[in-house]
Image 1 (cartoon, rainbow, N blue to C red):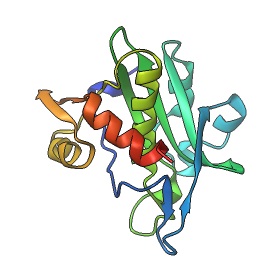
Image 2: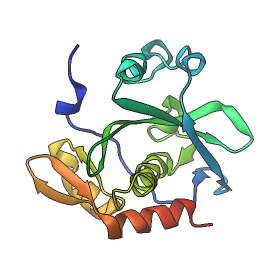
Image 3: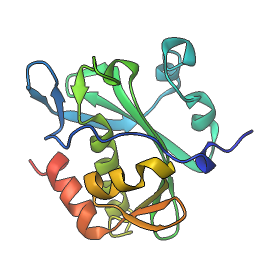
Amino acid sequence: MKNDSNKGLDFEIDKLTNSIENVVTGDSFLTDVSVITLADLKTITKKNNWQFDWKSEYKQPEREVYKLTIVNNQLIIQGLVSLEIKSDHVYMHLVENAPFNKGRIKMYAGVAGNLVAFACRLSFQRGHQGNVSFHSKTQLVQHYIDSLGATHVGGRIMIIHTIAALKLIDKYFGK
């Protein structure tokens, strides 16, 4: 199996929102993050315009795949994140917006930011002070510094430390 984590993440933070926001109306919607199920994976395919092989990601025993949904609308997945709990932080393997939340005609803004904030919150819950790391595509290093408060620690390695993690958590889960 090929290792996608060496390629670097290329999700874009379109906007930091309170939860997720309808791009047409500006309305905000509360979200839930929960573990993905095998039933969910039947619709999350490249044929349905998802970029990554989430079934393969789900099968990795050290990883946990989570889905973002709108409260009271659990059937429509807004985005996914694959996380691994390390000894001192949470590592983000993949982040992906649902196909209808990408590009100029997306339905909701704030999906990727919401998933990153969840990773930070999970890091606190696991006793890792909010620390989250990931590999970035080179051209997005500055974007993650500016949008997430991440720190570039060399190569393509990015870390979200406690202070930045708290800001993201407060933005998405503070209310």
